[in-house]
Image (cartoon, rainbow, N blue to C red; front, side):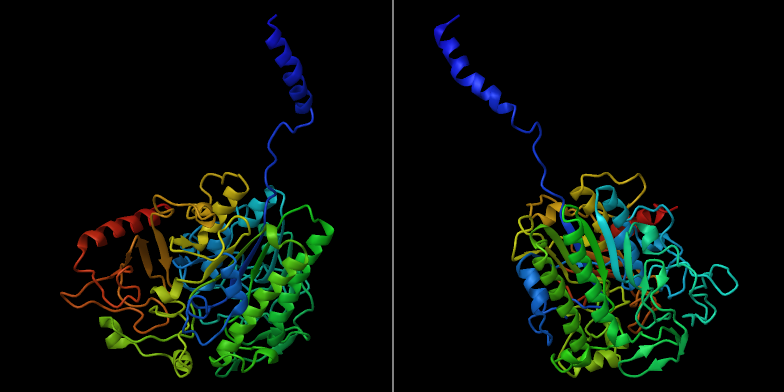
Length: 522
């Protein structure tokens, strides 16, 4: 044997062999992040001061979240109203693929999510997550009536909606809600804050039975349906109660199972009507009662940030803040041809106009509308060590993208045919340089069923009108007029010029995309 070779083996290979016995055989993966997802209710793109320098509302906690993370400027809800967006967030599917083709559910509708449907929490549970939902559900629950029968769905266009609930047996367990869809724990209310039943629900049952009939309230700021109420329930107590529950969940997880990741889905009830800011926020904004209620939303975001920091969880938490649709308290200067003919701010738009505030900033449209103000929303992501801090991202994203992104984070594959409208946007969250858009297109939907297709700078709406709250909901085209709407959002982000007739080739291309996507469900 060569002397040099023998010396090398003795002096170097033997120590390396011994060292290898003490090294792990695989590289240890980073621990899975906790995920906190706060969904504001009817918060507009221009309500958040880091998105709108001219906002009359200062949102320091949300602004801090953006400063410590990434602010998306082209993020959209799949629908311009709440139930369909919530469905899309949790399932990665457009809600118009279900029985709900327009409008929203009430507080007594049966479950909208089908049994055994893959959801974000059910996916994360497979990866070892503890999952909780605190807040507004609004995706249907199965109640039981006083005859022991399941409370049925009522057609969306029937006048008996929303229902009072005086025929419901509240002593029976509530099925088909969050716990049936992947959540381990639930505390919240069944639908919007203005809908019956007016009671808190913990897991399968009301915390206190709603036995007190309550009459309809209709004032400038309080729009509340007739219904059944728990003795302890006041609409003004809901936001602080939900915030307290969310904070307690974070603290419990940190103490009881610090090694397990958790997912907290926290859909708020504000600033949706009724406007009920608590005393500490009254008069603190320059946008009236509405602005004060937005401040309460901002304070809730701050409370969750503090809870994560106290619990030692902030550095390994993916924190997402967004809204379920555009803002209702908004106005704009009409410039587009149909707007010049039909548009006039409603009393809510006039309320903030008098105070110099535009809830959706420069955008056209409000909640429910197919225009940008109906579905372009704040979307902020903070993930220390992963998402570049203090950055802005113009990538087109949609709230349906959560499911595919969580699958990528946890290294899972979605079952075939599930989450078909969800796109993995993890590369964007990580600040990767993208050679092409993650989304080839996005589909949006209005309260009354108008569709729009977005691809690159182009947005196409096959019909005229808002399809939502703004007049005119629908416009019958006259001979020689455009039959639909086409906007170049890069050149015209406020949708002031309909170029339908100037670009028939774009209309044709986007129309084919829409038909193809709609046909996917057949």
